[in-house]
Image (cartoon, rainbow, N blue to C red; front, side, top):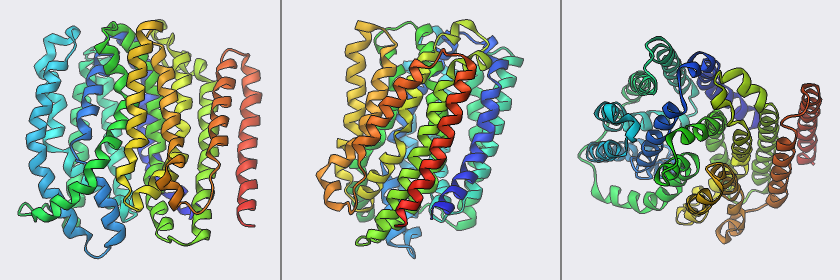
Length: 471
């Protein structure tokens, strides 16, 4: 089971992360032509776009997950009706989104207001729904290659065009918007191919009883999905609301991008792990299946610990190499705090997938929405008092709540067959953050030694637990 997870994660991850890695390595080429204001404008628009994108699916991914697991022979009939309804919804909602984006463009970008709105809004109108259904089919049928191809092509095109528009044509923040739209067109072509090959065309004459039933299940999950916006990108929106200068928002955006890079890379593991968790949790009375789920979670958590700690330890050197702009390099300590927060996901997945399989979606808001709202409220209180840097620390706290609070819900405790000892994993995360932050400026040879010890310890711990799990 774990081997299958890692092989699929490798396919998802390599295809998406090779272009992303190229994009990171391209930073020395483009950062010399960018300013904190460029990063600030892009960050604010991305925050609004991410917030609006959450409502596009109306939470139907939850229905699609459960219908595929529960009705493997007729899920297509359900999905196609949802597809038809969402197509109508996307046209109406997309126009509304474009109006909001138009009003949200910062004053520093007023000359390009209409153009930014059109470039950002077009994917919402025409691409997002088809991309959703094509990707969900490949994910649940465990066919990673189409997803891999789409990710690779989109990422590659985006990197090449970003370099061309920013470093070649000196277009500043507009280069990101042009590159994003054109790469979205490439991804849409792949999604249409998947839809056509599988005959998953939308049914526009859908049954209203099916839509109403699906909305009853899916809408409670919308706040859960919105929480990822509140954790990943709402900081920039809140900073904008608090009238923090766009340049400082840009500094925060540079730091938070490194957390987003890791989150995007680790999403490959999420894509590969979700069907496997569902398959294990379908064995509702099996202690052996529950132990397999725990083993998979512990192993992934150790890998995430090692990756985020080593990345944080070397963050100063990474910024010095990639960010060829002394003003932007000042943000590296914030990147350490944000990156360490993103190792929450393995423990989070184990709890959320169990609740989702048993259709306890009405309980998810207690995890995700509380974390997201808490992040925003803390930012509104602490940023005016202590500066924009506090946004990094509130994000870390919210991510920890997101990852571990699910284990204390009554609904989870009633369903769980084995203990996960979540409090010890939480404490380990905090200790690793403090250690990485304190070691951020030590000699390079010390960092090499610590990295070696961390790698050996992580591998030994994973091997040790594998033996214990078999007992």
